[in-house]
Image (cartoon, rainbow, N blue to C red):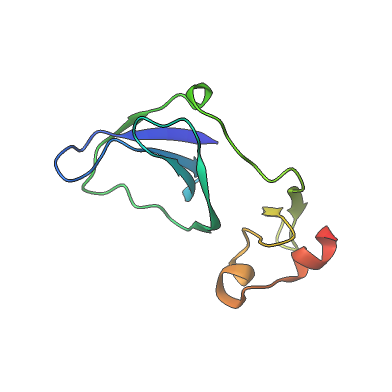
Length: 104
């Protein structure tokens, strides 16, 4: 998990964003300490036109689903699966996938 702090300025507040590879999984509002996780990660977080600095994940509370598991898909890619979501492309498009069935 990588944390980046936006330093663009102007209309963009200096929120901290949590990335899992290129996927945006959560953010921490400026001045707060709790990470807010998205139900579905935002695939391919685009940093173009914005400035970021490395952040420190030790400065805030990360609330993760304690029932989350990592499952290796048929292509060899690792996906994070909970009872409500999966990070695979199939879940992103259909809202369900075979990995969720394996999670049970």
